[in-house]
Length: 283
Figure 1 (tube, helix red, strand yellow):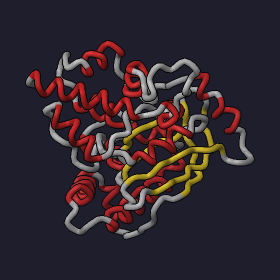
Figure 2 (tube, rainbow, N blue to C red; figure 1 turned 90 degrees about the vertical axis):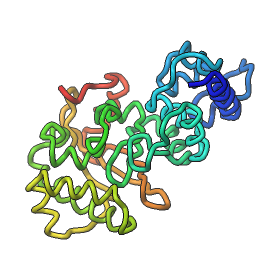
Figure 3 (tube, rainbow, N blue to C red; figure 1 turned 180 degrees about the vertical axis):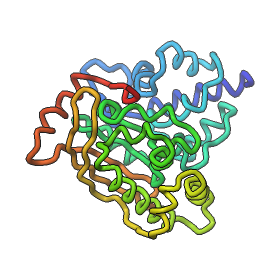
């Protein structure tokens, strides 16, 4: 990567950092701020990077940032889609295609996610690719950021990876199977007929899962707008929660948040998530 491009990348990051107010990203303003925008350490914290690494990026030095780091920076700085694409080009990285884990998240969705700091919440695509999670969602559902390709879709993992089903009690699996298939058909039908991403996912599932082929042939169609779920947690046991959905205007993204089901003891146990911290659901 050329020195000039590195310098331009650093200048662009500084300019975007200066315009983001702490309240825009859920941070306290504080009484003694010397800058109107975010500090470098705050951007680093939001992006999951070290302060030293981010500082080197702004100074136009250091190693070429990875696509994962660019995605995290774009979200931390609340970049628009055009700004995000520009950031990738400055870093000599390919601009992400829609649907993957690096998909552009609408700033409004991120703003709402930041405000839901006392309940598990995450933004996913209509094909169930997790784009961003808050701390409590990671603690409840496990970190979803390590999956790539088709495996980034929880629907794909549900039908092809038995470990994905550990999240729900076994007696709930048939209901979840039918709900995922019906939701996927609704999402695929809402997209353009020429959309390759949804068609590729369906084709792969038909070839790899006889269970999916069976329920897909039933042609059930229904978006998952609100669910009562039972979630198995390695420390807290089985939690009964309501999962609510807020759809973006084009239906391609959803903000999910989880509240304790009324009449259960899940409220007290959900409150323990912030104490327990992130759990490794792979256990």
